Image 1 (tube, rainbow, N blue to C red):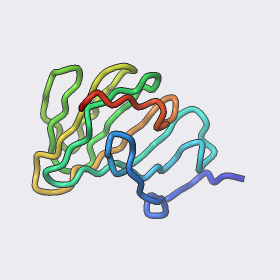
Image 2 (image 1 turned 30 degrees about the vertical axis):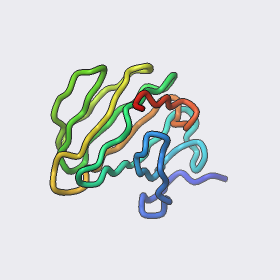
Image 3 (image 1 turned 45 degrees about the vertical axis):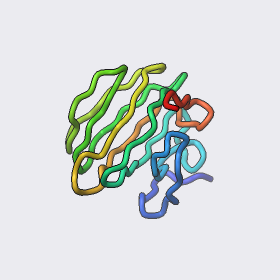
Image 4 (image 1 turned 90 degrees about the horizontal axis):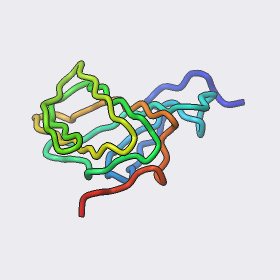
Length: 123
């Protein structure tokens, strides 16, 4: 039986299609969850994800620490600890770390994150 409780420290880090370093905390692959996923993402100082969108997934970014800049559909705005950003399917987005420490955020996806749902829009 898949677990109900998982600690982020027990989750292996991997690189997503948009170059984010994430730890998938709860998802169908590793838990009882079936319809969504929760991951912790880290963008290092000076780093950024590649601009991309998800064909079917809604996504929420919740900033846990650090400061950055988010761009959604060409509109840029600053992000910091405590900010939540709503992303609809098909919306191009990118996030930069503009601070002096890691930018750390949670990603919630419904339906769950899959590499095949990510479309890179940056060359």
